[in-house]
Image 1 (cartoon, each protein chain N blue to C red):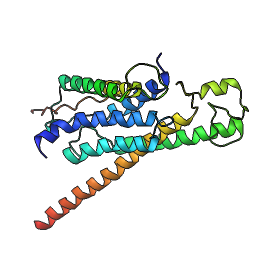
Image 2 (image 1 turned 90 degrees about the vertical axis):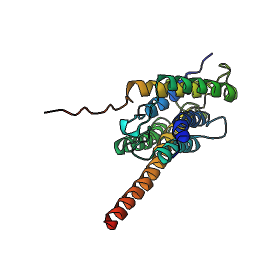
Image 3 (image 1 turned 120 degrees about the vertical axis):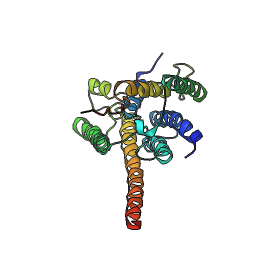
Image 4 (image 1 turned 90 degrees about the horizontal axis):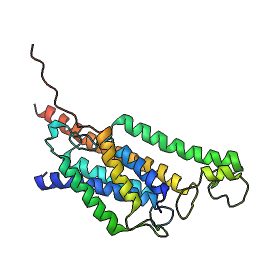
Length: 91
Length: 160
């Protein structure tokens, strides 16, 4: 049985922070879709190793942790778009 | 900073952020809570700001964002307290638990936290405190890094 509390609050907090992730071209950082996939898998493993809170019987994962990484990625995809380089307008 | 740090820090910051949120969410049953979790999330932001620099850090907290989150956190805390005062007569009364049995059942259900413990408004208070602390501590570091850059610019100007 899933508990809605940690899932909703974790998702909201993750979404808020995820919406602030913006990579500017001047920084020369290049995090592709693959990098985010690796981060998600790493978060999945970490959530499994942390385990659920005491008295929670909703599975082997830390549900709040998982909800947060999903919220972070959703926030990044929806509101935290990377800023593209401005094209110079030739007159 | 070295390339290894630049590759490693952003993914690590995201994982640390999740750990911070997990600390906030378990505040009512495990060690931790709003302040500790907020400080961990701020730590993730500081990690990025120190390594990449204030301008290039991938996690950007703008002035408006900090102001909004700080205000929202404080207001939500006050509203939760006032809700207790209105419905029970006690400021910050735990409406979701209702130990004294003084409030109607539907109010109790509204403020109930859906998990096995049913801790009432405690997790919500943790949440808003976490929100406030994470932007508050981040703002301090942003100010320090901003002052440092300003000082360096002034020194460069004096040299010329």
